[in-house]
Length: 423
Image (tube, rainbow, N blue to C red):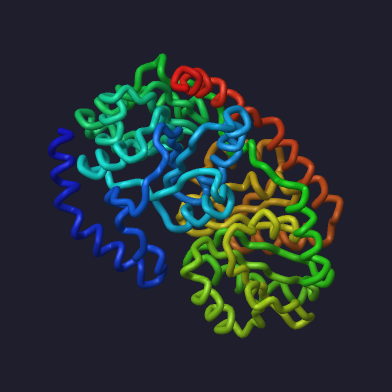
């Protein structure tokens, strides 16, 4: 089955290249560094690395605290982080700088996998969340490279899909030394698709171990004072196509009731910055782009954050934050960063990607879920008029994050055993 999978992957390469070109129209970074996707490199890298893979920005952000912990414990260790997306790549470079090696994950075709493995010769492989690559996993098994899936999650839909191809999935899972899942439901689903019981442990979600440096909070508060001039700041984070329009309409409805309201919009994908600016102008709203360096004045309606990597700081500058990807059927985004920073958190009905977190935070009454526009209007109005309510939500949100921390410690202990053996 793996041979057929590899053949099919080879046949799809022309279409994959076309897709990269298509995505590169709006996001030029997709047209760059193609060689890495086929494991062709322009320089020699360190070998014997501890290798981590995080698909994009969200997984990378969750991974950074774990990497820093391992760097403290093993300052001489050589670390590699691979990503799949340009935004994930940019985040790794911005946060970790030169302390780790970084390339794109090669496509899961035998020739590329072999070149990648020969180049870096990883002594441990650590895959974030739900990435199952048959050829990569097979290579790890054949070469006795301990392979871990950490912060693993598996939706019911994905589990049903994997169960349809057991001859491909089962041999891949056999190569995994340990699957550290986020929840017991994830554990049950991994076992259902063929993982061995003793190889699956529920260790919690490392996204709860989010790091919020004090200087990040201070920068946000300074931004609020210097640029926002005491306005009531409502931040909409990680928005997607068709989602901004919803909030711009709501803003126009709420503005007469809250004259000091300022809407801060942070699109999820940088290639949409220009598109969102035009949308604001079509709604006849006055926009200030973050990269312009301009200060918001009383007539400014929207502050558009056309930068990457500043979301935590922007949360600290807000009076309320709505986490996007949840008013359109995208599946939601991580609400824990906002809660950890200390801002009242709202989100919409589409939270399938963060189902357990959403249920937990609502059970603790530490966030607000809005099903429609009317819910959003009433919630923002209530938060504006009641600072005590805002403070209660903030404190409950922080407590919810603290109560669920500790996954990184458990994962570090497990990885430590093999790191020590291979040193």
